[in-house]
Length: 147
Image (cartoon, rainbow, N blue to C red; front, side, top):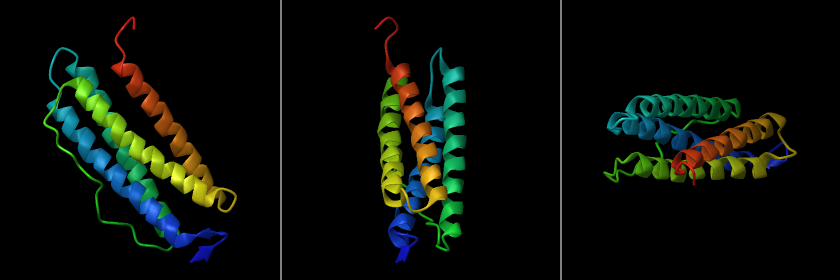
């Protein structure tokens, strides 16, 4: 169904994918925080719990936009993969994969609404910027000092 120059059903589908991906992030980062061991545990656990809280905020925001469009938010959750690898490097690499999925969904949303719906366009741009910053942080964390 076309709405202000964009396909509302397609946009709601992408927003629901975002909602599910962000909810998976809540579970994923909460789990990771529980599994971190070693000397650097305390700051890493804090960072992971902050990421879980941010994912929940993003999920709520996507859900609000879905209902703003007079549609129904999904009760689903994105894929959760348990690799049983809990080294901080492994966790961060898995985090990168998860964040790339979210970034892809936000880019898809931007493509669908650009020039048609200011609120959704600004939302997509803001979240793309946040996800790109987050990816940059994780990549820096994965670098070896002096490398």
